[in-house]
Length: 117
Image (cartoon, rainbow, N blue to C red; front, side, top):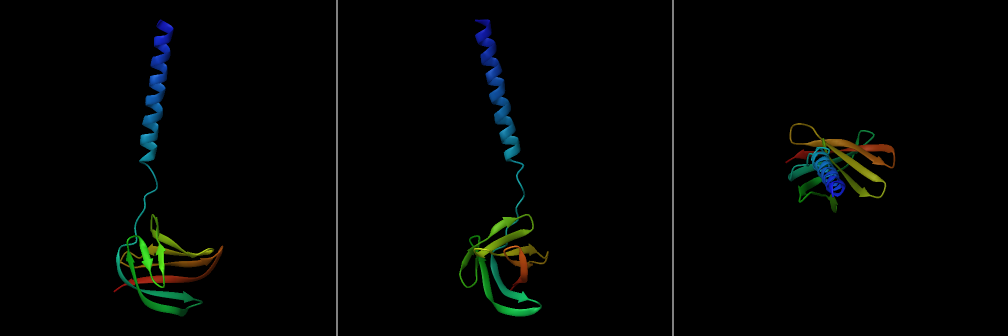
């Protein structure tokens, strides 16, 4: 009887320990900043040349430019996969805008800026 009681206590303590660790570690995830909703001017650059400049907006966690592209939050803003292999990074500039590199695969091919309107 005492052995069964001891086993129940050990199992209970193990469950409490695992649940406590999961709650603690689950709440320590990577911090994420969102790209703020609003109206922007989007400028796409490559080799210092403006390729495209147009009105854009961020709404519902998406960049609305030529299409609607989900923004994946990062600690500094976010990134967008425009199509397979083409990613743009949006880092907050601290003044309400965002800028960052544009990649095709692992190669940096240019950059993007979002300037608040």
